Structures are given as structure tokens and as C-alpha cells.
Image (cartoon, rainbow over all chains, first blue to last red; front, side, top):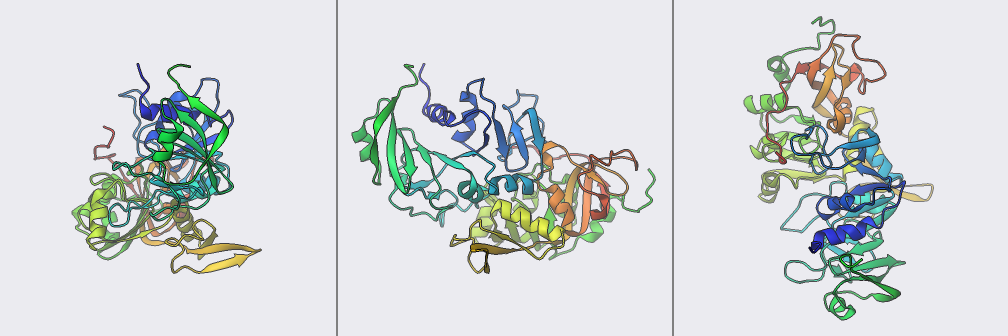
Length: 222
Length: 230
């Protein structure tokens, strides 16, 4: 049985989480991350609506309509969890008390700019909490497909879409590879099996260097 | 139940506070924690041309989304409208104005309004072409901030788990969300409560919003929409 692409990306993102962290997850693929955390890791998942300490999704039939994540889907809480109002939830973000945010994106530039809130003339959903999270979380991880539906790279030299925030992304995990962004430049640090540097280069519309100890990730073998 | 402060009332009587063209602030996040009976009352009374202030526009048939989808708002101040495609269509066609505010900034603007302040200073979006557009900036101690104006409304509507006759409010889990902030920011605040309990039955330690901020309390019959996850 193979691991599907989305879960492979989520599995890699889970490696960014260490015990004691406060972590905010975006909607979509990031919401799969908790399924891949080792049991011995103690983490507090934060939600913008006002929860610290979210747990797994409830079993069908056990949903509580007044206990939902920021995307509006039912969740549970873990021991040590708390509720607060949304102003306080954002105070935690602005103060840098959220250690890691894992977001989806439309584009990421080689400098670490993120564009994920608007497609002018097409989709104008609003920024929600994305600006605060991107600008203020201590570490920003982006989980996104490497290319869009037309095969166009979402990793770009400079974002053509309006920015959410600039110079803030630390790591990008795509379906092909993992890039780290340090001091305004992008480094290819990991490749998902079976992709090669040549394939990734061909699908990437920005400059990047290659890490000396490039890692090959093959979750199905090890 | 005894009603010594005259705050407990019916939906019908509470509807007297609503009129065409008013500014209405609402509690809730994706419809969770939005007051269903009050929203139904606004629809039934056919209130038009509302200026709505709240986190988001719900879903087309959930929460404040029911009002938005029926074109009852001329303007919305929110952080997100993505879960209500009708809101996006109305905005694109120029039938509804939308003012976006980053979510945390919006919350603080509402809180500032409720706390009697004129504005807040924040560096969120200070270099952002869209967020900083037409806003004043201020440099304090060498750091640049945006001046984000406080928000209040003629009426604020919230959803509580419990209310007592003074209007003291307790919320339910993540349905708290924006409700305590919104409850403080209305010139008139109307709370819809799942349960109305006698004075003295709420532990003063558990009260999230003191009744000082609350003008009217009405009973709720609970949510009357189907959730997206159902």
C-alpha cells in the first residue's frame, strides 16, 4: 500500500514538530499533520477562533457543533486545553508565542515571500488570519503542490500574486521536494522518492542551491 | 423568572432595535456562535441595507451568511468571505462592498470599540500595499505602526450558552470566539442565550462578559441550520 501524496507531505511536515510546541495548522493538507505525529510528542494545537489544545477529529456521531476548528470542522480537546476569545488567540500569534504555523499557499518566492490570500479578479476570499500567522509565527512552514493545475511552478523568483507577507517562510514542503529558506535564498534540502534533482529543477521557476547532505525521503521503505 | 433589570425580553420585542441601513455587529466564526433566532428575526423583519461587522460571512445558509446571501447587506467589514461564495459574487458584481481587515486586527478594532478606545496600533500589514492603503502610520520608539480605527455598532448580537437577568454571559467552548468582543462593542447589545438562569446561579468567577455590557437577553431555540460537516 502506497502513502498518498497529501499524507506524504503531511508526514514530512510532522517532522518539524517537537514536544512542547504551540502549533497552528491551516486548512487542507496541513490538517492531516496531526495524524502523523509520534505518540510521545506533546503538542498544543492552536486555533484562531480561540482554542489551545485541539485534539483529533471526533468519531462520527460525537461531533459538538460548538467545538470546531477555525475552518468550522468539529474537533476535540486534549488534557490541558483551554478556550479564549479570538482577540486573545491572535495576541498569542502577534507575541510570537505560536512556535510553528503550517500553511497552504498559492506561491512562495525564493526570498520567502508568501502569496496565499487573493487571486485578483478570480478568487477574493480575504486574508483571514494568514497575515498575522505568516508575519508573526516563530517558524512558517508551507505545504503546497509544487505546480498548479497547468503545471506552472508555485515556487517563483518573485510572487506575481499579491503578497500575504514578505520574507517569512522558513520551509516549503511540496509533493516533490523540501526547500529551506535562509537569509533570503532557497536551498533544496530533501527529495521525495522517486524524484531527481533534474526533475525538480525543471519544475521550479526560481533559483535554489542544493544542500550538501541532500536527503532522499522514501517513507515506504523506512 | 424575575426580571428586575428589564433585560430579558422576547425576540419580537428585541426586533424593535433593528432598522434599515443600520450598522450591525455579529458574533460567530464560520457560523459557530452566531445567534440563530436573531438572524431569523432580521430576515423575517426584512431589514435591508445593513452594514455588517464580524469575522466572516459564514456559509450561504449558515449564520450571518443567510442575511448576506439574501442581499440584505450593502457593506461588510470582515476578515474572510471565502466560505460564502454568494458574498464573493455580490462583491464582484459591485452589489456589496467588502472591507477586509486582518483577522487579529479586526478583533482588536472591535475590542477597542468595546473598551472605549479610538484606535489600535499594530505592525501587522504595515508594509502591505492593500492593508496599509489610505491608513495613517505612526512611528513610536523607532518602530512603525498602522493606526487601525476602533469599531462599534448600533446593535451587536451575540450567542451565549447561559445568561442571567443582569445579562452576565457564559459561552460554550469554541462558540465563544468573537462573541465576548462583539458583546462589548454595541451601543445596544442583544444576547441570545441557550439557557437563561436566575440571578446568583452563575459563579462570578465563570462569567466571561459582565452584564454591564448587555442590554437585552432573549431565549434561543438553538441552531436552525445544517452544518457543512453534517
